[in-house]
Image (tube, helix red, strand yellow):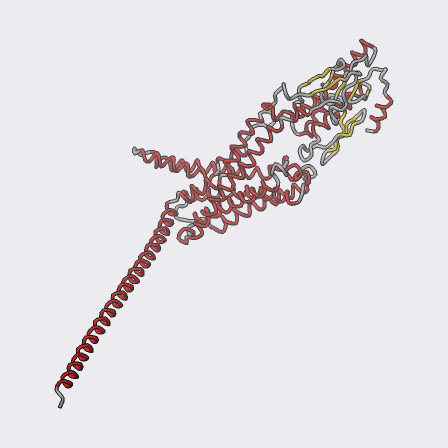
Length: 540
């Protein structure tokens, strides 16, 4: 870089030179090398994004500082050089964009040289031709503005959101024949602010997926947790091997939804993702490893479901060993996750950005997932090969319905719908389609708990029988308690009525007794009075 700066200072505008940025006049050879290097730096120096580093530019070579290696590449457009750099970039389309940028700078320099040959002057009162790192600007009259289309590497993911009338690069030539340097602080007198606006369209898709995944995870947890409790609550159910396998699958689904819910809130939240990825904290890397473990556990237990159904077809009277199945179902995902985490931690290429970009190391996890799906497909085909002839070769339409139901029941535990998560269009060629399929894949993947719990639990005849039995007992208990309460209330009513009658009779008896006594006393008193009178009339 120091050599380039010295050459920039010593370069004389009177010779054939090419203008780069703000009044940096470089000899053509140096300009072509430096501009191509600048294209690389601006296009690929994304924190936590590409697996490439910045390039140290000098007149002869370009030193690319990778996360794991350093490469010195001659900037001549030789196929060997392109292959080396493109292999490091890891994307053919991105590499083509870089090569187009390099070629654009070369063509721009050639144009400036032709202008100088015609006029023998670098300036004639017009704003001079220049290269601003991405776009070539020809001479412009004073007090005019110029527009260019946005570079493809900025808008490639949101092309359908770009309106050429609104989103463009702009440049302003002032009255003194100089480009307006205040129009932009970072892009060499050109303003690219309008080109960034369509990125909000991409954010809408990203936010939609984020909240869709959270909603599906909460829905799945609301169905899987009660289903697991149901299986664990009934001994008659849980003692069956297939119910135990279902329970382990449900536990894997609970782990998947819970870990992904935390991951969405702590790492992938739209307001936190940039800062979190740049910090590359231990927390976010551990959460990333746990998400891999949860996905592997879910796939492996789906494979166990398929294995068990296939086993029952081959060995009708002999059960597999449950302990071996449980050990394989949980140990396999654990070992694969440990290998993945160690590989990412020790890798100089991918130990950054919260491990979001695993590169080739992602196949440590993806390969077992594909194997699980492939084996489950084989199990499914073989099972259907045996089941369908027994079901379809009946004349009654009900058997066709049973065949469809059988296929539907087998599809959910096998997780064939999860193929969407491994097959997706290239984000660089058809990004809108990729976004749409990503939304579908997110809905399917994070709704697995909801789907599988309905198929294996809530529509299970045995579960429905036990739930009805429990509900019947509960209703009977309530009815018995209601009868007891009613009987008690009736007894209390009779008791109250009896007491009232008894009190009324006692009162009447007392009243009658009192009245009779009073009459007797009155009679006695009258007799006494009469006797007294007689004695008075007839004295002795």
